[in-house]
Image (cartoon, rainbow, N blue to C red; front, side, top):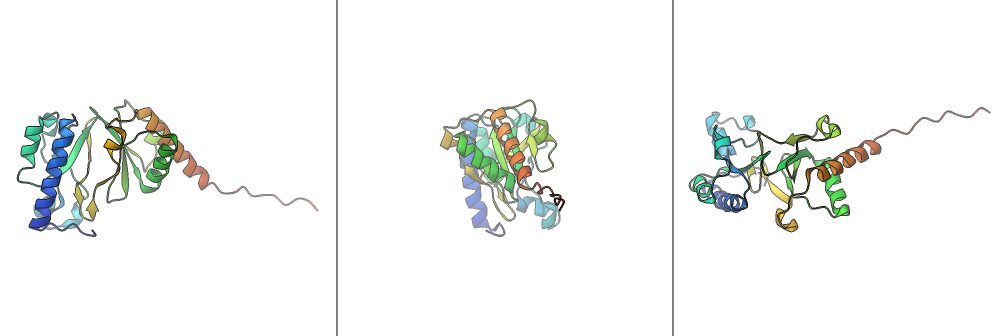
Length: 212
């Protein structure tokens, strides 16, 4: 899907699926939130599609909504196809990386047999969900393509729509019995993936010609 079709039929279909996913996650204790979606922001911005970069919490008091009962969560999506967000820093964290690093880290996780729910976004970014951490290693914190979502942040979850596609699972939580991996384990794997990527682009050292 190159451009999200926000006709009434698409809007209704997304709302039903988003509502079901939100209720399911809330029932497992995940702090879900309603987020903005392309059509809403387009209307608010006078039809300027280029100004919309991704969903943000739909309510300014979103922190007060954390831990809402599944019945309340269901009511949020009753008439509006809000994006599905989950707040980070309480139940889970997320590390956001680019597509290349995401693929490398996912491969390493498979090789080690480590559980890790992974989300892919239409903008080419990947999200690795983990338990809550106090910090991330400096090698990750200082890398320009890595963003840690901890306290006072959020991430979109499937099937949240963007303008040019839909957020989807690369590895679903149920594959690992809804167990979030320890943050330090995923951080270590991401750091290794960064090191591997750096080694792959290291130029060969010039060899001085030997004297005749």
